[in-house]
Every structure is written in C-alpha cells, then in structure tokens.
Length: 314
Image 1: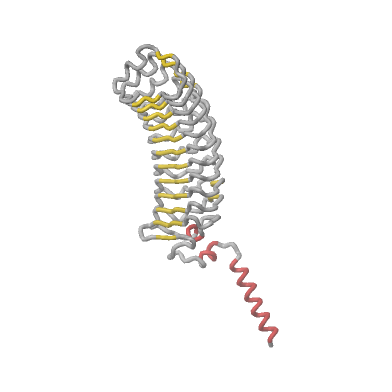
Image 2 (image 1 turned 90 degrees about the vertical axis):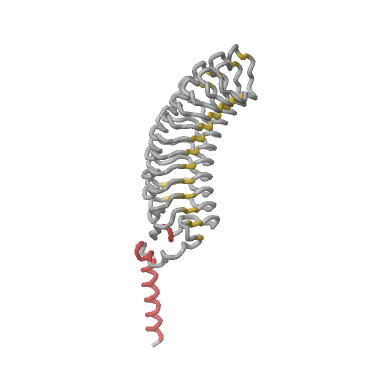
C-alpha cells in the first residue's frame, strides 16, 4: 500500500512542475498579484513605482504582466538590466516619466516604448548603448525630454527621432559621435535645447541644424571642430545661447553668424582662434555676453565689436 501512495505523490509533483513551466503567460499570471506592489519595488498612492538599486537584471514581472493604469512614474535605475524588450511596458498606458539610467542597457528592441503614448520624459543616460535601432522611439509623440547622455553612442540612424514631434530637450552629450547627418534632426519641430558636448564631432559643414528653427540653446563644447563656416549654424534663427568652448576652432568665416541674429550669449573660449575680423560679429546686435578667453588671438581688426550694441560682458 505504501508504494502506490508514493507513486501517486510523485506523479502529482511531475504534473505540477510541467504545468508551471509550460511558458504560457496566462498560467504565469496566476502567480502574480497585480493588486500589490511589484516585488523588489516601492509604490506610493500618487502613482509612483521605484525599483532602484535592487540588482534587477530585467523589468519585474509584476510590471510586465499586469495592467497598471494609475502608474505615472516608474524608476528602475541603478540596476543590472541589459536589454529592453517590446513587452516590458505594455501595462503602463498612462506612464509619464520613465527612468532607466545607470543600468547596463546595450540593446533596446524596436517599438519598445510604442505603448507609452503619454510619456513625457525618458531617461536612458549612463548605460552602454552604442547605437539605436531606427524605430526604437516609435509612438512617443508626446515625449518632451529624451536623455541619452553618458553612453557610448557612436552613430545614430536617420529617422530615429522622427516620431518625437513634441520633443523639447535632447541630451546626447558625453557619447562618441564623430559626425551628424544633416537629416538627423529633420523632424524635431519643437526642439529648444540640444546638448552635444563631450563627443568627437569634427565637422558642421553639412548644416546639421538647418531644421531646428525653435532651438534656443546649443551646447557644443569639447568636440573637435576646427572651422565654422556659413553652413555650420544654418537654420538657427531663434538660437539665444551658443556654447562652443574647448574645440579646436581656428577660423571664423566672416558670415558664420548670419543665421543666428537672436544670439544673446556666445562662448568661444578655449579654442585656437587667431584673428577677429571686422565684420564677423556684425549680425549679433542682440548679443549681451561674448567670451573669447584662452584663445591665440593676435589680430583684432578695427570695428570688430562695433555692431554689438547690446553687449554687457566681453
């Protein structure tokens, strides 16, 4: 009588193991309490979920397999996540801010954020991204801030930002970019602040900013620009602050600033400029601050600053 009982117990265990490992998401869902805060996370009544510094290697199952329409902020930063898949955020239709900074992310599937139509801020800084797939930001039509700084991005496909029609802030600083395709920013009609410092960009002669008429701040220090020409700043009619310090700029063409009549602050310090021509700053009648320190200036032509009627600091 003992052996049949033992056999029955073993048979029940085998069936149970098989049922729990069949990979079916519906059976997996039965083990998750979607009314509770996801494991390894802290939740509050205002719609925030924080899963920081938990050693996570993936988005918690309690987020992937549950509908959580009340969540507006998700912070999964300071973990060990390497990949973001297309299903990771399906249950968060009203998410407004997503923080994924300081993980180990080196791959994001296309359409990974396509269900997050309410998202306004996406933080992917401090990861290990080297490039981005063309449709990775598809569907993010309400996104206002995209933080991609401090990765290892060396190239960006044309069209990667095309759905981001509401974007105001784009942070790409401290990456490994060496060039900018002239169509890269073609569909960012509302962009106001662009951070590109700390890359290795060498040339702006293809007018990479020609479509950014609403840009007010361009932070472009610590690159490898040698020359600024008429094409370098084309399209930047609304630019107010331009930071070009710590490049290798040697020459300024006489018409380089003809496209930036709204400039109020211009930082050209720590370059290799030797000559200031008489007409180079003439379009900048609204300029209030001009910084030229730590250059190699030998010649300043007559009336070089005569058109700077609004200058306060020189």
